[in-house]
Amino acid sequence: RSPPRARARVGAAEAMDDARKLLDSLMGPSRDKDFEEQKKADGWKERNVCKRFLVGFCPNDAQDNWFKNTRRDTGICNKIHSVHLRELFEKHEDRSKYEQEYEREFLQYLEGLVSEADAWIAREKRNCRPPEKQAKFPQHVKESIALMQTQSDNLLKQAEDLAEAGNLTASKEMVANAGKIKEDIDEMKEKYSGCTSVEEVCEVCGVRCEPDEPGAAIPNAEHNGHYMAHLGGKLHLSYVKIRDKVKELREKVKSAPPSKEEENSSGREKRRSRSRGGGGGRGPPAAASRR
Image (cartoon, rainbow, N blue to C red; front, side, top):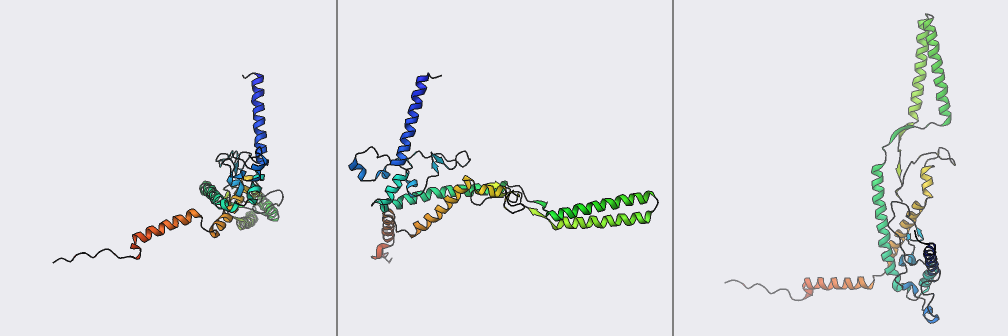
C-alpha cells in the first residue's frame, strides 16, 4: 500500500485537476492570458474545446455522460465544455466563418447516434415476446362473471342432490341451466379477450417495455406504467433531444449556402466534365477513308 503522504499528494493533485477543469468550463482555457489576449475572445478556437458543445450539446461530456452505465455508452469527451466560451463564440465576428463547419460535423456525429439507435430498435423488435391472447375485464364484468359462476356451481350441486334422490328429470334440467350459464360466461370472456402485445419497443430510444401495464396514477389507462415511466427517463429524453437536433440541423444545412470546399469541389467537377465532353471545342479528327 502507498504511504499516507503519497496518497495525500495524489489526492491533492486530483483535487487541483478537478478545480482546473471547473475553471476551464466557467471561464475558458485562456483565463490566465493577459488582458490584450483575452480581448480577442477567441478561446473557443482552441483544439481542446468541444465544438459540438459550442453549436449545441455534447452527449459524451465527461461530467455529464448521457449514456453512462448503459449499453449505448460510446466513451467520454474530455474536452472543455464551457458555457462562457459558447457565449463568446455566439457573439464573435468570426462565428459565421466557423459555425457551418462545426454544425456539419455535429450533424454527422448525431446521425451516427441515430443510426445506431435505429439498429438497436430493429434488434429489440426481433427480441420481443410474441403477442398473447389476454382477457382484460372491467370491474363490473368481473363481478358479473363471479356471480354467474356461483349460480352455475349451485345448479350443479342441486342437480347432484336431485340425482341422488332419484329425480333424474329435474337433475337434467338443472345441468342444462348450469350449461347455459357456462356458455354465457364463455361468451362474455371472449368479448373482452384479444391478442395483446406483451412487449413494445419505443421508436425513439429503443427501450423494450410492457405497453399496457396499468399504473397507480391512471388505472387501466393504456401506456401507463412501464411505458410511461420510461418516457421520463434520461435515455429516452436524450434521444428525443438528439433526434430533434438532427431535424433542425438538416433543415439548416439544406438551406445554407455551399461552403468554400463544396464550391471548389463543384468547380473541379465541372472542369473535369467539360474536359471529358470536349468543352464545346472541335471534336476528334475524322478517321481517314480507305481506298
